[in-house]
Image (tube, rainbow, N blue to C red; front, side):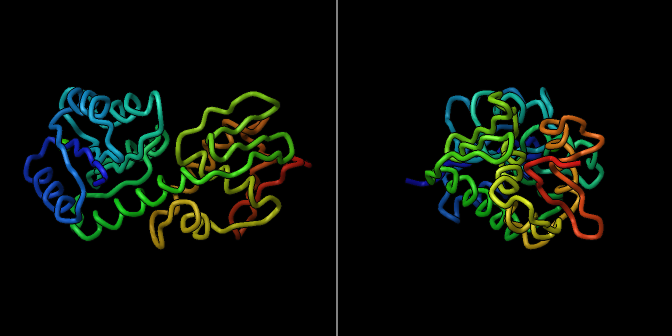
Length: 229
Ligand code: CA
């Protein structure tokens, strides 16, 4: 069965070009031209992925992203203009999986869509839950618990934290994390920095002085399950 992609974009030229290209790649595509109808469409049609413009009439892309992610993780690829950097950071924080800056090439779009799809398919493989330090990871249910309490994580935050829990006490560069967790061979390294910061806020006793997700100067990050000072 063809995978379903919802395109939420108010610029008709872009929406049509994106839809045509994705259809030629074998995807089933529907479009919405404003925020509220994007939310409505996502609920009713249950797409496998949403391509979401940041600047939309009615509700902006960030709010649309929040609403469609309320009940379940739905892969989101955000479209942004070059000046939307702050919004973009928020976008990645509210649960977008990836983004493309306009103007982008059709080939870039298809590659990003394929990467997000691959990653979300990976969510269906069954992996046994395990404990690391004070954390309990259930990869298949996509739940992290700390002292028995579920930690609320967005899609990408979960992926990154699960990666650290699976590879404790090993330092990784931001490039390695971008490749292993995001599936990008190149991209903005601040994406990793921002996600680590969000994770610290949610998992560290004192986020300003992290003892679990540590910065390894000149390298990147390392997860220390014991949280030794
Ligand atoms: Ca727009």
